Image (spheres, rainbow, N blue to C red):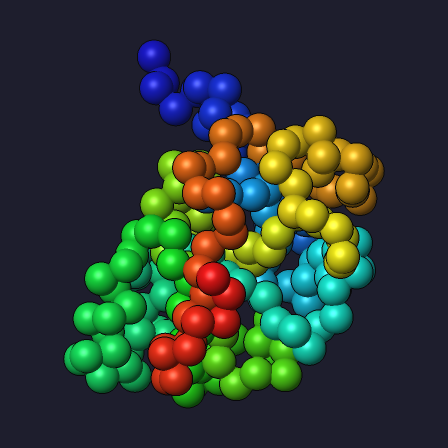
Length: 191
């Protein structure tokens, strides 16, 4: 008997297939529902930004399963910076990290020269990014100027057929979306 043939595995697999085909998915995160796609697929990111009505210049967050998925962003950090960032991961902390090698596309960074990244401890986010084999986009599932979705019904109300897949699951325990902190300035961008 194959232990991977669980309903959760099936939904994870469908989500990965949608992302690989250039689709946009919705999935539960630590506090709110998120929208995700392949960060290197400009058409997918453009579609995500369009349905969210979010301007590209603001930039997007990336979410990973583990440090190995983002090691190229950690290589240029000092020992102190590395220790500061990794002390909070995996966990509900998003750090704005420098992209000194220029490997993250401009449609993800927006007007910035750095990128917001989180290594999540949320069970389904980890399974999703592990199954995908890389980090994905993670932005709240809501059109601009609307509250982030706290349940799948709100996600469907906001986006309906504009999504390629909705990964069923449970939100984490956070009351608010994850903190975002800039590594270089140590400024809290979002509390």
